[in-house]
Amino acid sequence: MSHLKKIIYNCKQATFLIEKKAIKRLSFRETVELRIHLYGCSFCRLFGVQSRAINNIVKELFRRSMQSGISLDERFKNNLQQRIEEELKKN
Image (cartoon, rainbow, N blue to C red):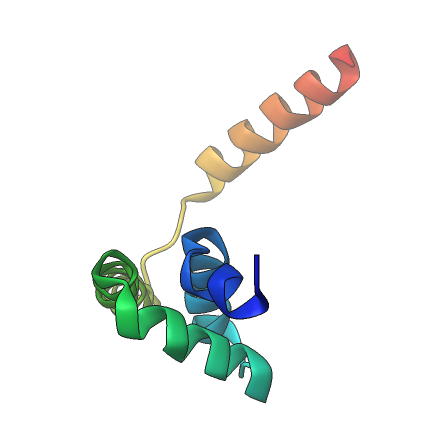
């Protein structure tokens, strides 16, 4: 199979690159490969739109939670810490 066909038919690689692009800049080669794949794959284009929407929602929720000053109370934190330590001792 030619390299171009591998790019065109590899949705797994395309979705990986879409997610990678959300975190950091893609190399020139990765950008070209992703554009080639997205040109012909409506499923991966839709995945990209949905992935960006989910990432934006999560960022907004995180931003709002940081602004509101919501935090866990100390009793809950201590209880959770004790449970973690107990589980670690079992192993």
